[in-house]
Image 1: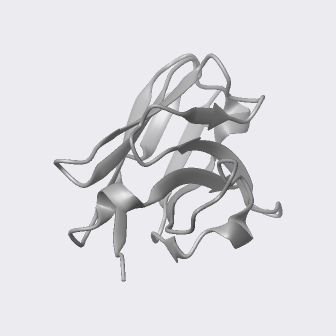
Image 2 (image 1 turned 180 degrees about the vertical axis):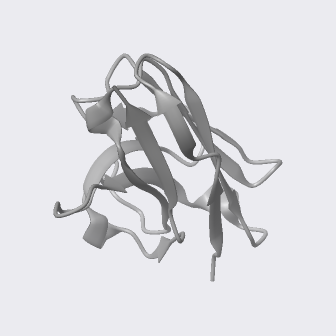
Length: 126
């Protein structure tokens, strides 16, 4: 069982930056692939970024590539999402998720993840 708690959301102007954090409970955090997703009102939850157990492999949605960076600190049981050059279309509730399954490729679909946080709101004003 893994419990996830996101923090760091807020209101920011376009072009600004935010860093989201996701703190995980449990001693086996390093065994989980960690992902970030987001959901805007009236839209489906969409993939943002994912990071492997070790942190050596990452993958990003095309819409955030070059602007967002995912990282993790296994000693602190925390995964981060650094968001730069924010745009109004980045406005959404952001969720972190954990996947403990062994996969050939990093998971990018919500159904592939076992555990979810409660989400943190990010609002980007124009």
